[in-house]
Length: 85
Image (cartoon, rainbow, N blue to C red; front, side, top):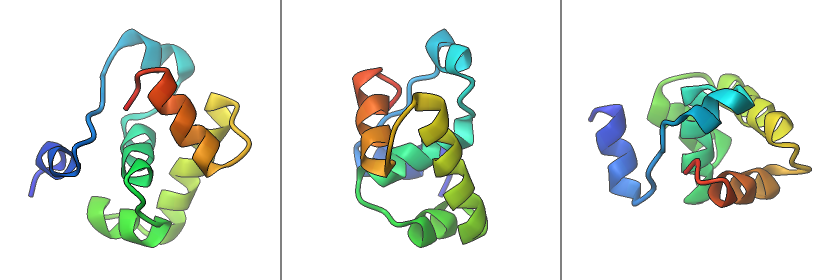
């Protein structure tokens, strides 16, 4: 299944806009946040997007830092609030 189709199946959408670029978030970081928003673990995210568990964890940590969040839940909430996912 293609990436966009996989995300569409979750009911979560990713918005590609200049706001994302201004935060410096990568497409992969946003994709991991979108999967985290539907309750996927780092291991599950890694299997879905085809990277190692360590890599998916790093994407989420990087996104958390860029969003100024204190934890994963806060990062997902910030991404939703800002209209990124």
